[in-house]
Length: 230
Image (cartoon, rainbow, N blue to C red; front, side):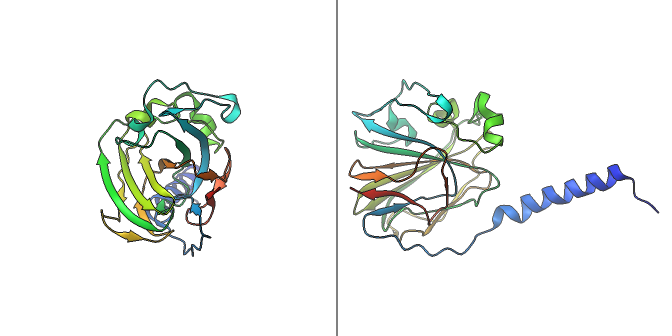
């Protein structure tokens, strides 16, 4: 009996979706992290959405990806729901559902805080969803969802200073799992979070450490050097 082409295509699509949801999303490749002294590693796989400098608690405005810049009228500390130093750097990594969804510690140190903050389920990209679907860089720092959505936050005390990491959910929610607790000692590349739906991972680090990635770069968690001491 010949199976109609439409049914075969539907079955194939269903099998592909099941594979992505039940197998592909849980892949956890073995990676050996060996940063040099003074280096910070990217905590997640994904696409660099923005690299911005903070001065006096405000983001220094500059040209963002594809000429798109969002004006901010709220304190940068709202990203982390906590006080952060008045000067430093922000790097945003857009983690798609097709990326490796496990995140890791960016450097050796101690976990100073682990926090979960409930929030909205707003789209991160808004009018830029098609651009994001094509895995092109979009500056999401000023997007409403970046400020309002549910998030998991980690603070690492390192030799470079405090490193803040915020994993922000998308319109599908966060549904994240934290593998670390306050007081844990970690090495660079130590497994930190699982983000089953992807999201936006925002990292704060001090001015004494200079970014080594740029907007549009594809990075690997625990492998790509995100920043290096000046």
